[in-house]
Image (tube, rainbow, N blue to C red; front, side, top):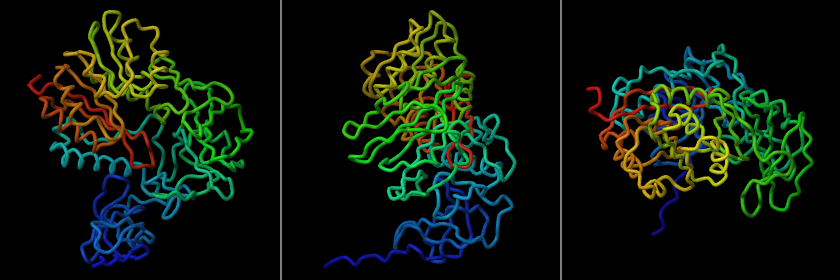
Length: 443
């Protein structure tokens, strides 16, 4: 007997009370029937009309947008960006909240993930609950800091205009300006020209140098346009067949600056998008680890060598650093960036595969900055066995951090301190730095 198709609820509206914030840029509400709604563009305590954007009868939960605010929170402001709101650009989650409220909501999410996934209160994690803004981001309500130094624009296939994706959609919201884009990105004028034939255009404005770069992803069979932007740039393209990034014009890298050093970052390579982020995170990591001359250290998921360079500077000529990174281009950049350090070695490959092959059985310090999914039980178990006196875990996802903290606790480590930074204003994202040490230490 054929199963009856469930009825879509997309477009159905519910009048609901908004409950607590949830991880992902939305809040939780329930219909009168008890079905869970994940509601964007709302704030805790509000009463709103929520219109379903995804889901069907009997689903575990529905996704919805708050399309009418019946009772507003005192933390609500009118979204400064004309492209923010239900059905529009999906890049910013909290344009409708005061800056202080945004940080408070992010803190509540971090605390909830720690409790649920690691069994820790903020106090047990050495955290006072504060989410710290980046330097220069203390702006009044109703204003938006321009911080994003790397913006990937989608291109509308019909008009060739640049825009940004709508939330959980491939549809393009054409824009004339992104308010969170850094000045160096905005001055390129990407939104003001025709990008017909392109799938996407990524604009990069390096911090600490005048390097500017655009990376073009053409649609199949399309010819690259002649790029004439409002200031000189290097131009790269993503290969149709190999997916690699290839030089068209100018340098195949940009130069970034952090912790008193210049780092080469190849096209498409990872670097923190907030101009203050790299320095902020290096400072937090080094303050937590307190490196000593002559110690040994691991820098895992090391990218272009940001933390490895900071460690090498502080460990001195008798110290040693091993970095591990899976990306081939990032490894080339890291080796170039750290060429002046005789006792720094960078290995290419996945951490879980390379680390066991090194034969390392003990180490003094560990820094890990894994991708959004986290390091995982197997890798954390291996790291805990190395007996490091301190571990610095840099995380862009509080859920992955909390899961990995639980694995470290199984391996005999405790969280000494946790610091949380709002390096992505107007979005739901945060960056965390947890410092761990053997559980018996100092007790």
